[in-house]
Image 1 (cartoon, rainbow, N blue to C red):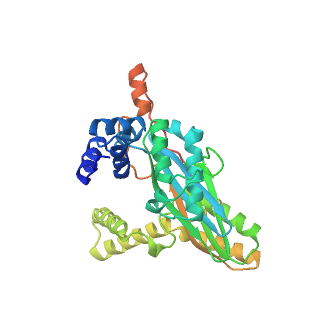
Image 2: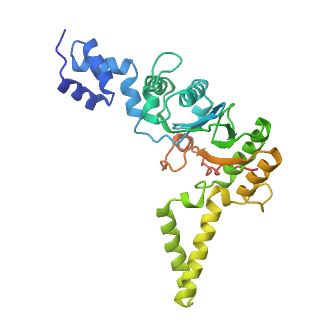
Image 3: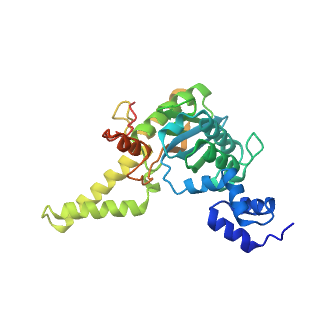
Length: 319
């Protein structure tokens, strides 16, 4: 058997873009012959999968799952919306969400975790890329848990049970009856899907974002020509409004437009006969924050056929 050196593995990795362990295995399987190893990777779909990884994956699915007092949310991206309808892809997202629920709770740990089939998540993902023919990636993972109470899930725009474009988890700490927590959790989750809070409490908001808002408010107030002390009050008023509008507990409940979320939770606890504490939440919206390429699959098909492509409307939850 040929002596496989680290330099050979590095060389093959640079040429193929495949993973280090895959390159080492390819060289072992082919007696250290570089061209044969490259062909081996291609036949396994590994080199092709890596080439696809340079393409933007901003579609896909968000998966949510709950078991008792624990819940998990996962976003798995693909290049096109067509893949979200693929049964193989849906099963993968569903199984990865279960992995996050019962074990690994961050992206790196999940990739090395075992799937029900016995292969790792990373290996299954590589196989999916090769067989489905699109770049795919596990983008983010969150898990919530309470000591006593409930974690409630909600999916907006569901493609299948527990899978959709917006996934929400709500963590409620309480000794209130399960049905009361389920109802409150569902109402809060629907609100979160529609209202898009940026933090649980006002003090949790990103201070860098607050600074940007303050700069904008200062510039606008300065155009009024009012005295400096009045301008300062105008700026602080704008920031106070921003904090209230973007912190979940101080937002107005979308179902009535007048009750603060903190009051909604307090009333639910009073009605249930036990205090309820909203401890945390998760809101994953598919592709949120990903810079999409100007030319995607649908646009390429439209261009090739000569049919103009209409711009896609943003998904907007309706409660």
